[in-house]
Image (cartoon, rainbow, N blue to C red):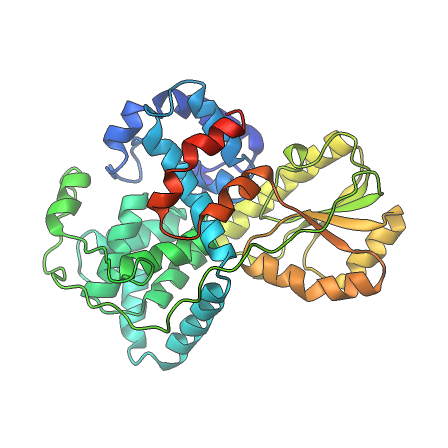
Length: 397
């Protein structure tokens, strides 16, 4: 596997889904925990970059899966897709956890006493079998099997005793599918902060079993010392979204949080022009940036074909230039897919007051999938997953 293993087009995503969906039942369930290595196919779908930027939607993936399997037969894979939805909903109702993560990351960057230990871990030079290989694989390819991500995080936190926030930052800077919610909360879960007191402790035996004997690291921690932090605030209601009038001329602002506007907007929506955000500051690192650069180009072509309007790439979110482009096209509103907690949402929040002052409001459109599932991410995943069958049924999936 290399950085070119994920062609950044919707067609590539659909092709991968078509190939995988027939194997999303028992084949996935029995092989999903095995990481056979970067050059082996394995049982997982490797759709995560496409889902992360919504070049393909969760609804499409689950719908395709259930066209081949019953829900009980494909339960493990459907739940895996819904973990992404759950993490986003959970963080959306507790945005302060993202802010606290950023503060902890910066504090550790400034104050952690052993810079050399961090550098050795990131370079894959710790001498720990498997861990060093995954560090190098991540940097080289932008991808790790989910089980390898868990092992890596556990060894980083409990064996090497490095700050979890710096490990989460390492992943965000290199994963092609770098996602603020999934990444931050998964690292918190391993550390014992997400489900308070419940840690994930990697063992040599488990690693050997699920890497087909490729790795069996020695000297791993046998005791998990949970980091300390301030208590997490209670869940707050989801932010409300303003009414969207499809007949009011609009300028479409596409961000990396959702690159499939064809399924977001109806055919009758009056789109006068479009801007495609490609701001490196809102993306994790070079692997994500390289992928999104191609994905934005692909989305721009689809926007032009579907909405018959020009689409321009925006290298940053500047309120003045966005207002000027909207006015030039005759738009009376700027519409964008709802951006969940993270750098894009932060950037949109900074420019929103200027847009309102200019008389061109920024209207966020939240997908029905998120509206149905996010409100149920108030507690742990297990109460959430109990609601999955009924919600899918209500949505006609």
